[in-house]
Image (tube, one colour):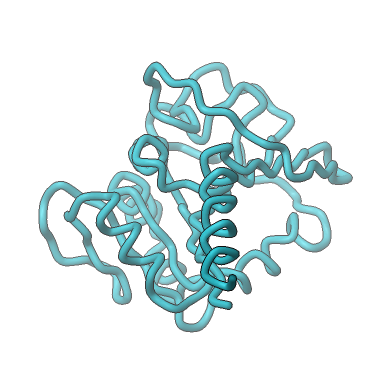
Amino acid sequence: MKTKRKIIVSIATSADGYIARLDGDVAWLDRPRPKGNYGMGEFFKSIDTILWGRKTYSKGIEMGMEKRMASGFGAGIQNYVFSRQAQESKVSGFKFVGEPIKEFAQGLRKKRGKNIWMMGGGEIIASFLDEGEIDEFNIRVIPILIGEGIPLIQPRHRLIRLKLLSNKEFSDGVVELRYQLAQAVARNLRRLEQLFLCAR
């Protein structure tokens, strides 16, 4: 049976829910990490595609991360940057995308491959979320308050229920919370029902 590709937001936030300061600065994330780096090595093995918002991509370039971005997070990783304006990437291995999110996401899910990492930032996460195209959140809460900044999800009136899959505390006080969206649970149940009916 073909396994459905999941789109997973895997990201670090401050304890007050921000992913960066207002200017995009993430120096507060520069801290000693425990052995195993919060399981990110295993996570990288489970994905083959990364989705970037244009601002997150541009901030990476501004911070001089071209080499790291070009080398990718593993062999064979595909990188897509979402932008309203068509342009060529300054980093090899990156492709700019301007098509509607739902159309792109559903097309990507149909292709054979591993899971898909939603890198962020808050605007592109919100856009995928509002289109029903996020399956899971993997949030690492850093024990620090930064007072103001860019929120995990761009603000808007919402009511989206989550199912807690797991929680894990690390030696440095970081807590990892894994959530599945309730709509993703319902979608999976419908898919199982369809498979059951086809098998009868």
